[in-house]
Image (tube, rainbow, N blue to C red; front, side, top):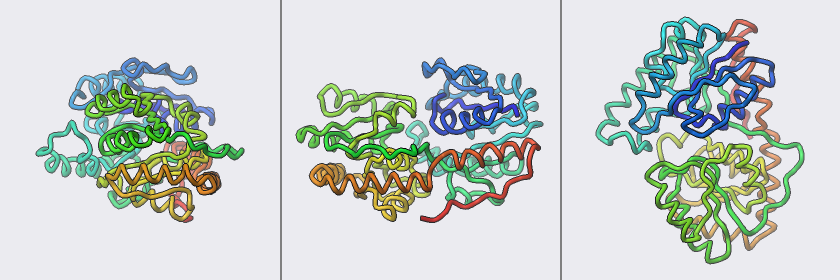
Length: 373
């Protein structure tokens, strides 16, 4: 099977796109053409894929990237059995050559709800854009195939669509115990994801000799505060690091942070970083985002702190530092739950089989709900 994967918004080394889905396709022996902003992100394509470079869509600067993607899709669609799109923007005006093929939209987020967290979208425009987004979703559902990243996204659509959850690779060897000297965050840094809260919590922790390490690219409006905090010695900010290397850095940390704000898009989206921390035996400190609570509390693998409360987050870190038995227990229980429920290869098989089915190679699969804890 030949698959053409396209994104102009995400980093080419995005964990879901490259390290999970594309890797699963390659492991299954399929051919992948990958249209992505390699040069804009200073990313080197994997030698196993056929790369096509396009500009990156950022903020309000999106038209040039979308035009380049349109040309690239026009050229490569004829050679693909399946076209896998990762950005809703790409659905607006697909080339005819693409519309005639099997097009799959991988739904990463609640696009309409996420408008409130996108600083580049003018506030007055958000109420007008939400109905347009819903119309685009309904049209895409009629014309294309959909994969959902969350069970909670089902309510947005009229038909049933398969869910490919954002899980992670979990080693069959248990990780070492978490230490008491540092805490980590892995993922995109933004206001809504708690970047400024983590800067504030890092100050009292630095005075206690505890290092806060932030691993990920940052939105423009939080870059200066992050740079200032790093220059002050308050924290360490790595910038973007490919997912596999970022998680190796995270291993052994006393806690993994998931301080999301109370945004509509997060209320039914599982923070992948929570599962990634668990898989590495790292205790979780999360805000009470419902999907995170549904994982952390039943498995007893971390602590829940209030939204927008850096002081409470810092106190949770100190509690873990002062109680080695507590943090080691959190780490062990989190790892066991991740291995049993969130090991990506289990979901990878269904992901690949579903694309093969849509390409006409196998019977169509019936979507399965995520098992309860």
